[in-house]
Length: 231
Image 1 (cartoon, rainbow, N blue to C red):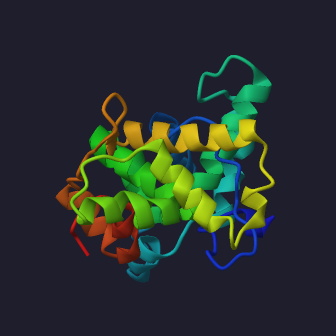
Image 2 (cartoon, rainbow, N blue to C red):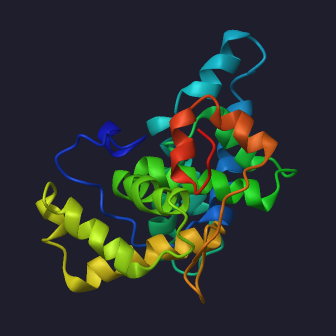
């Protein structure tokens, strides 16, 4: 379903709330992105039309990412033991990658891309695909950094969720178990993206590389997902 892919519209009545699996999924994202890039290169020459570069830089992959789902699952490219778990993680990675542009996907897949840059792009993917995560990153993670606070706690997250539930009753409908999984997964992702230190709750300023900064210039709203003074 097309509506299940790409950046979530923050004006939707209900949030997407399926981010209960995997944390940041940076390495899994790299593997699936490489599969997509390789698959695409068999059919399209990106240099055949100069306009492609602009398109790749600004337009999301969207539902096109699903064309490699069957291959990813059947070949078990993520090396996950059970088929059900493999299928679940592949689906989650595909959803997040659908919110990236082709330029971002290709950079994510490149063998020479530093791990920190992959982490940054997968954090962007998570924040775009899940509006709730993106809003938390902007309104709490980044805002606390800009205000000079050095820590970010789960209580900060809980207060944010409580405030959002005034407009999104689906948050109040979550079971305690599911709500806890969502919170844990957000903090796991932030830790893996090196934006938050688990042991001390320390908020870690983001130092985006020149390469990632240049890529995100095409979607400058993405800078708001990071604890940085850029943009």
